[in-house]
Image (cartoon, rainbow, N blue to C red; front, side):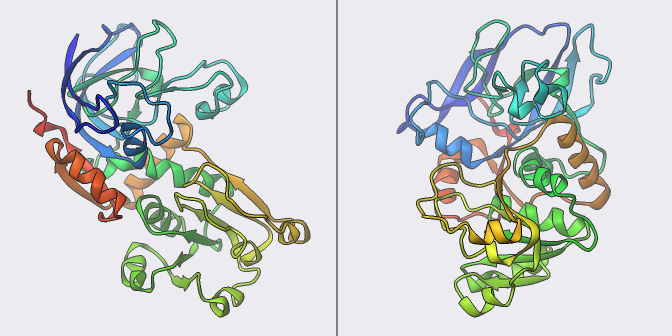
Length: 349
């Protein structure tokens, strides 16, 4: 079927309307009309080929909220009219150990990503949520609970699950002490979720002007990470630190603030840290330096259900798709609080 979307055709050209072919639905497929699509930093990086492997044309978007148009003959969990979500993945091998234990994002054979990937059944390319419709296997479609603001729910499918997964992995709950490094798209979700889970939450920031907003989002304490005295006062405090900084930076100042068996988890940056790390705080305190990558389908559904119960959504600025290049430029300047979301009703030929 022909579908209208918005595509990048090179690393430098503006995104523009693009008609492309979606597959005809398979028996296990859900055909979805897209209502909203969040704008992720990954979209920007791939559109502008920052990582050097983008293939064009590229239709980005992996924070998708939509309404079911139709379902395949074998689909029983969804029906036309249901409000649903699609996140960063649309398939995996489904039989390796990560897949069978609910961690499809770590599929031994590689997950099929929502865009810029290859369909493992017919070899076609995947196109994302900057489009009118999407067709996805029911196993990778999420039920959006009633009561969630739909635009605010879109970033939960990437920023939300990226921060939820380590919070659950390290068993955060009432009495936990959680630190969050950085206040952006990921950081603001980490504050909201950790607070809703009952934790005592501290924001580490280099910008003293963020205190008021941080408290509104759920921070109990704000620490200026460039102040040695403030950092020293936190020795042995945290069960978990969620590090959302998206560029190379030093983790050394934060490790002594972890308690025995605490963990510092990187979710915002993939690449060399460009530092010679003193491992003494790790060895002597049995502390861990770890990473976490999005989340599995079951835990994403768990996160959505939790957010509906606790009234958690992302702080968003809704834009027409014609402003996407302006939004990318603003993202590079950190000029958004805290995520852009595209109203797909604005997409017209």
